[in-house]
Structures are given as C-alpha cells and as structure tokens.
Length: 379
Image (cartoon, rainbow, N blue to C red; front, side, top):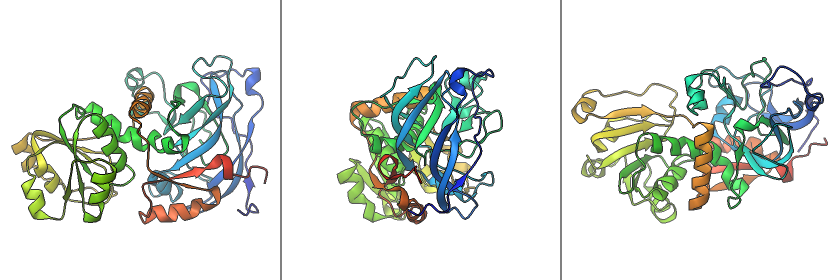
C-alpha cells in the first residue's frame, strides 16, 4: 500500500462519561487507519488520535474489522449525513491492551468487540431497558458525533478506545475473524427473531434474501429449532441454502406456481433485502396473524398493500441492530451453537477493491479486513 497520501488531524477529545480529567486521560493515543476524504468513497491512509484510556474505558488492538454495506453508504454519503474524513467500520474485534481504573468487566488480554454503538444518553427509557440502539441520542461507532462534538472514528484502524458498557466479550471458542460480522449482521437478525416471537421450536419462518444478513439469519433460526424456508429471486442459491446453511426448503420468488403453493404456510418472515421488491407475494405466504419483519433498508419506499393485511390480521414491523445486553446474549448463543459468519478475509490494501465488489454483491457472504497482520501504522 502507498502511504504518500497519509493525512493527520489534531488530537480529538472524544466523549467521556465524566467531565473531569483523570491522569489516565491526559495523553491521546496515536492511531492509524483508512479514511474516506470525500464522497468519492475512496479510502486512503489516515493518521489521527484516539482519546487516552479513561477510567471507564477499554483500549484494544484491532485485529479484524468486518465490511458492512452500511460502510459503503457512509463513505459515499448516500444518506446525506456523512462527515469527512470518515473512518468506517463497526464490526470490530481485537485484544485488550489497557483498561481504565474503574473498568470491572475486562482485563488486558481479553478478546473483545465493538459493534454499531459507542454511546447513548444513559437516561432515557430505551437506555433503562437495555435498548441503546433505540436511544434518540445514541452515538454510532463511525461518522457520528460524541456529546462534546468530536467525531467518532470506526474500526478500519489499528486501535480502538470505548467505554466498557459498549464493549462486548467474545467467547473463547469463536474465531475472531468470523465473529466480526455478527456484531452487526448477527444481532440485526437475532433481535427480531426474539422480539417478534419467531424463535419458538417448530415454527415455520421465511428468510428473504441470502446475502450477508440472510445467511446468518438461517443459521440462527435453525439453531433455535425453527423450520426455515429461504426465499430468493435466484434458483442458483437453492443448493447453498439447503446443503450448506441447512435451510429446510427454498422458494424462487419469481416462480408464481411455487409461491402460490406456499401461500399461508409461514408464521413469520425476516426480510433482509435492501433492493426494491414487492411485498404482496411475501404477505401472501403468511398464516393468519403472521409477521413480516423488515431488516433491510430499501432506498425508496415500498408499496404496501393494505387489504391483505386486514384479511390476514398481518403484522408488519421492523428492527435495527440490538442493545448491548442483547448483543452479548447473541454472541453467547452463537458460541453455544457454533455459529459464525461465512467470510472472505482481505488485507488492508484490498479494501477499496472489496468495497467495489460489495457494491456489485460480489462476496460470499461478508468481507473481513485482517487489520492486525496487514496494516502498517509506522508509515
């Protein structure tokens, strides 16, 4: 990788739970990563500073970071709120190198991770109910602002500093590289299965789409004892869905005969697709009182047919990631059932190519960056 484009920023004082500085907080930590400098989305080497390890902070060496489709949207400012320079990455795993004096849950050497959140208000009803993901003042791991106005930098970097509340323990039997995507994709599908009551053994649940979300949705659902039908536009994915992932059946959504034969057979559906697609064929698959849960985020509104909802007493809902407590629960469940993501590990100097491939859905199923072995922070 060429490092001639490396830029530096002055040390930023990231948000702390207390306003008083302790001796631990006096020396910001040098960090090195990849950042987008503008909406072109091209990443280049970037030097910056993390805050020093505060009394409630955990500092860890980043070993792997997943590449999520959200990263692609963020670096290109597709949603209109990105700030530059932007260091992406919210599927971050590594090993603890330092802890603050008041940290109770972690010690040096622990395997840990940070997902989509690094902060919240800690005072609203959502926070009180372990739903930090729905806190109106939650702080995203990259491209957001701490309460003091400084910018958050994500996991495409060599070190991470975070309040221990938002740090997750990685179970010993889970491989770090294949666990990274669970911090986003895993919790994104685990949470709605639990919340909407689609986790009962013997239930019949459909999973729409077999990409980065869909593949782990099948794995979690099967581990819960659920009968799983994968619904896809491509017949080519049938063998993968059934033989590799363990789905019980497969429907081609463009095959009217297949879809009609399966009408009224599903207790619920987890829809992971972010592209435009019709909802009526999916609603028709549901039993009475069935639930269609959206976890993908199409850029444009989808057409919603109302009469089938009335006739079937159908519930349509949504879900986004999960709270910290539930995310830890998800990781522990994954460890118990040996669930991990199917990944392609790439070096740091391949990240721009990986993002380009991701934009074309050319990945099976998630890219993970080998930060620990391939980043050159001395440049």
